Amino acid sequence: MPHAPRIAFVTIGQSPRIDLTPEILTRIGSKIDAVEFGALDDLTTAEVAAMAPRADETSLCTRMRDGSEVVIGKDQTRDRLQALFDRLDGEGFDAITLLCTGHFDHLGSKTLLIESQRVVDATVDAFSLGCQNLGVILPLERQVQEFHVQSDADRKIKATHYSPYSGDRLEAAAREVADCDLIVMHCMGYSEAMRAKAAAVTNKPVLLARRIVAGAVQQII
Image 1: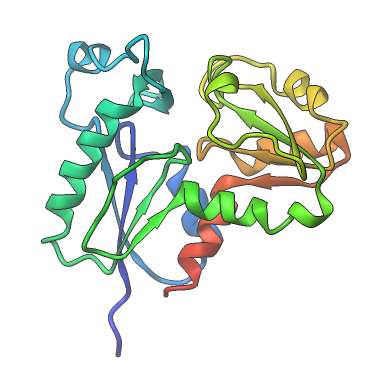
Image 2: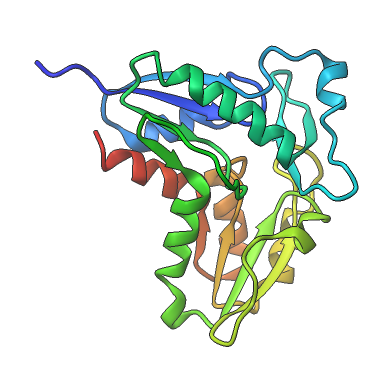
């Protein structure tokens, strides 16, 4: 019988992601050999703190193994991810799934790479014809200004923030984008329960990043 696909799930924080990976695997449904890795797995608390975004660096929000939230710089994270991908290329995986919806330039792998940001943004673009106003929920207030998708003549973007790892402003964030045609929760940390709550508050369709990515993984198994 064919072997179960061996897939590396890579977080930009620390593994295991007990808040994220089990929900993705449940939605995938099929039997796979899932192995988790984190860009920050081997770092001390002080080393992670040193990765805080510089003044001119885009920020990323992720989860540590103990459940705490950490904010790190995108450029430094990209370098660690590339080093990890280079190592995983030699470990016999059928695919690597990057569990982050941040936009990374010049990031690559010889192994089939499922890049969550590209998958999620392509799905959102597929709704563009009927979506003139897109609501985006991001983890950090500073990311509202940093978000890589911008308004254009065909679609206006309204972004707000709610951290899946800290705080309790999900309802407030949902209300702030409730006048949009479509809402996307643009972080892998958002759960199905959070999506359901945002949908109930807004009475609008809400796309969940981890659900979209789980669907992408299903296509290769």
